[in-house]
Image 1 (tube, helix red, strand yellow):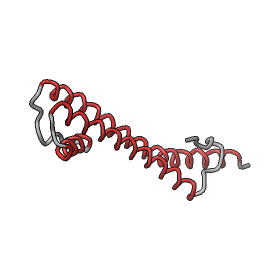
Image 2 (cartoon, one colour; image 1 turned 30 degrees about the vertical axis):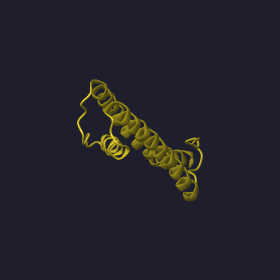
Image 3 (tube, helix red, strand yellow; image 1 turned 180 degrees about the vertical axis):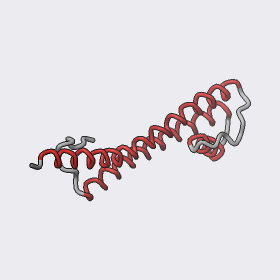
Image 4 (cartoon, helix red, strand yellow; image 1 turned 45 degrees about the horizontal axis):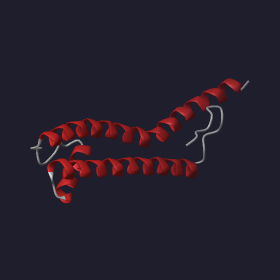
Amino acid sequence: MAYEHRRARPVPLGEFLRRLAAHGGAAVVLLAVSLAIGMWGYARFEGLAWRDAFLNASMLLGGMGPVDPPHTPGGKVFAGVYALYAGLVFLAAVGIVAAPVVHRLMHRFHFEEDAKRSRP
């Protein structure tokens, strides 16, 4: 997703909203894939039913922590690694969604500065 140069005019609101929706979609895909990985791991290493695996994985992705503590050695390792991964995914998802908003704010400040400098 390309952004406009700082000396170019900011994109119209409609295009900005499409860009924001595209970034939101990318964040949703990242979260869905991460949720699927977590569900697979909890089902594989802990033998949880898919609903319980969904609950544990979604709680970790949401920052709350697991509902069912792991009991097997493999499950404990998976849960630890997945918890670290989930924290990074949360930060990445926030960054993906916030990027167009931050870019637009920074772009407006720079565009206004450049416009003021070019006036006589």
